[in-house]
Amino acid sequence: MVERVADIAVTGSTGAVGGRVARILSDASVRQRLPVRDVSRAPVLPGGATVRAEYGDRESAESALSGVRVLFMVSATETENRLHQQHTFIDAAADAGVEHIVYTSFFGASEDATFTFAREHWATEEYIRASGLGYTFLRNNFYQDIMPLWAGDDGVIRGPGGSGRMAAVARDDVAAVAAAVLQDPDGHRGATYNLTGPESLTFAEIADALGEATSRQVRFHNESVDEAYESRKKWDAPPWQYDAWVSTYTAVGKGELDGVTQDVEKVTGSAPLSLSDFLAGSSR
Ligand SMILES: NC(=O)c1ccc[n+]([C@@H]2O[C@H](COP(=O)([O-])OP(=O)(O)OC[C@H]3O[C@@H](n4cnc5c(N)ncnc54)[C@H](OP(=O)(O)O)[C@@H]3O)[C@@H](O)[C@H]2O)c1
Image 1 (cartoon, protein in one colour):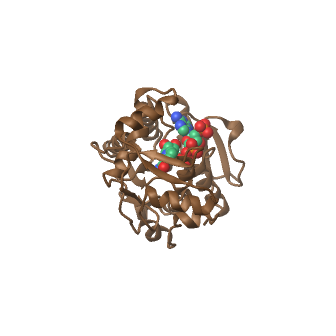
Image 2: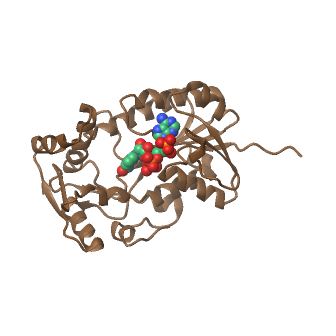
Image 3: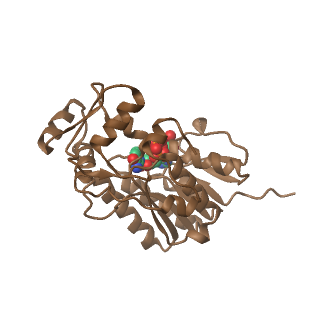
């Protein structure tokens, strides 16, 4: 008997979102290919076949994607040449015969978004649209999972976010949406989903939720933009990284991460986790 080759590929399975998606598909007995940079760190899952691929390496990418019809593409880790890596991977996907890319974009992606990485996501969405491939874009709000990391050791969240609100979403919900889309790609072809949690919170409210969940004092300090660049100088980083760190907050301050949507529930049939659910240890 000839074994059928998996026609779904899930990237990022060594990471948080891709790892969750790969596990959900495996639990649902879906066969999948898992392109990873480091095969030794790939999850070992029933129905999963690991292959080596690096987005910026056209040859490895094309060979890893040969025979794949639907590709879950986790956006690459932020680096100076991330766009080039991602676009190389998309070119490789098109040449390998992929028909549909499900890409993890960002809430409010646009060419003039305040958050600098949201502009890169827009550029990649544009690249995918221009490629002629089918697509589904998952425009994720900030992850609830990273909220605890926003507070420094002194319990202060610092940044020029003012009283802006963000509708952060749990990685579990993003993964559940991605897994649902991958199992019915034609039903979601051409769709853009804006993935949020069930509420939109200010930094002060996020600080309160973190304080409550961890029984420590957490507060928000509304820095000026100059103060924000200055306070981040303690970390040695290239200029684009400082711009991204600071614009995370200014984007929220301008309301660009605000606005609850129903898209998680629309795709998965279940309401998304709230930040307090997530901090209390709830998962899907
Ligand atoms: N919405 C938000 O709040 C937010 C926050 C942080 C990040 N993000 C974006 O969302 C993406 C997914 O989030 P996550 O939490 O799953 O991140 P993560 O845990 O860092 O996982 C990223 C995954 O992508 C893989 N990857 C990164 N660059 C790659 C490349 N050039 N070629 C091949 N594979 C590559 C990584 O492989 P390795 O294990 O080999 O590194 C890893 O498996 C991130 O990569 C980032 O772009 C969003």
